[in-house]
Length: 272
Image 1 (tube, one colour):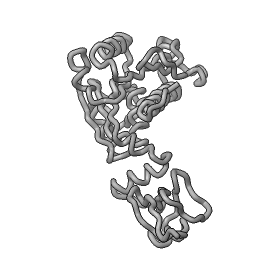
Image 2: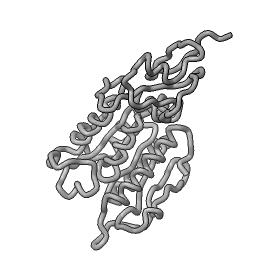
Image 3: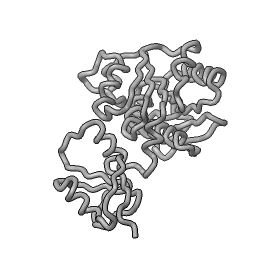
Image 4: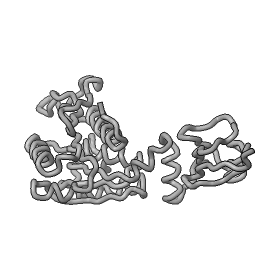
């Protein structure tokens, strides 16, 4: 009869006595824990632990070390997902309403490396939809977003480039990226990035956005496969123009479509 089993406790393998229950392990390891997470879901009932179970104990209000924080965040994912995301690098071209929101979403799910590119500064008009704060007005967007992401998830490696992307620089900046996100405002920049990626990094998937202005139904924002390696998020029609501006809700919906498409690509799934 099996005497001991292996479980993952805070992402580290531990051997415990066969028949040990979830709450008994909590009482032995962290008796003041308010939340018990087992295999990605909060546990409200005790049960016997099984081989391979992933367990984390959380005390509300406690500030964990970066290593423990990463284990806590990973515990809320589906089993096996975190390691694959942690090993990935994603490039984001443009850090406005789309790019800053995509970066925040990817940092929260624990993507290991974010390559952030923008040449702009934070302006008051950005605050209606972009992930910046009043005290960051005037800062380079790369510096401001790096500071914010460090507060969200210090385990993510952030590589900022305060430059205006051009065909000669795109291959070198994004060569390590498994996926690239297009988050520009201008149609000319969007086209330039797509054309350059096709020519110089043809095997790197590109997730673009178009059609997210105004306050039309969020249900019109969708993810579509345009062709191999190119995915479009948005309704494809709603352009910013007089009387139809860019606002946080629809921009955020499109950005999270992009972030979800990136995640699915990193996990070997088609985004659509």
